[in-house]
Length: 213
View (tube, rainbow, N blue to C red):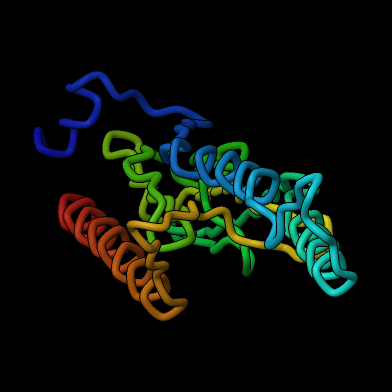
């Protein structure tokens, strides 16, 4: 069937290990870290003293408490975590841990030494706070007696740790435009919708392949 050979016809050849990398824009994350550092380091103390101004102990104590808060709130470091998932159904997904933000996805399809169908990578996306990979079985070499290609997904997730030891999500601090973060349910719904979209494509394509055999 010509339609089944379309994948190869447009230059995509069957391969044992197709790989794709998706990088989410990092501008907001980088700006977030820079903003947090400048905010903690540059904020004014409650009381400023001059040579002719008396300094009361309660004012000094409040300044020290303010300084202590700013030091503890400032960033102690950036944390990069990597999470992975794989599936023999042609579709795999995974989410970043709590208090972290997905920044990139790396995906590939593998026939596992020809024990499975060859795979054509058609999807490697981030959605919500996770990612999804999708692998079509390659049309020309498709064997209905073999299982689907294995789909592999690796995510990189970024977070920060304050000097006080608290782990935080990197979001910009803005006095004029408050940052509204998605809820865990909103992120979950976005990821589930993307999983369904990718799974539906795999199912539809596999149905066409099986009908042609």
